[in-house]
Length: 117
Image 1: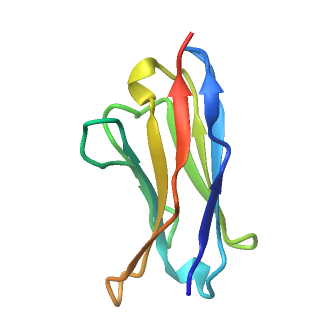
Image 2: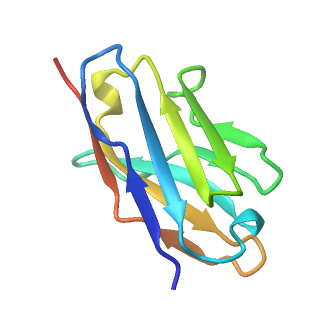
């Protein structure tokens, strides 16, 4: 059973920064694509950023240039650096681990990010 443990969420003022972390307990971390998704109240879950096994990243247009996703395979962890946060970034952020061969997706429990003055 894979466990994804997210941390780093919280309350931040507009223009501020946060770093989210997601640690995976499963084996074969380096053989999985990883990603962050978010869900704001009353809205559907949306992709924020993904990183492939090879380290290639993709970002939602709304976060390009502000967010950076990276992975540390030695620590089984991905990091989402978020800068220039605005109230529209307020959401629960979910970590995703994707097996590109089996198609299996595992999810973390989510961490709340609130951007407010």
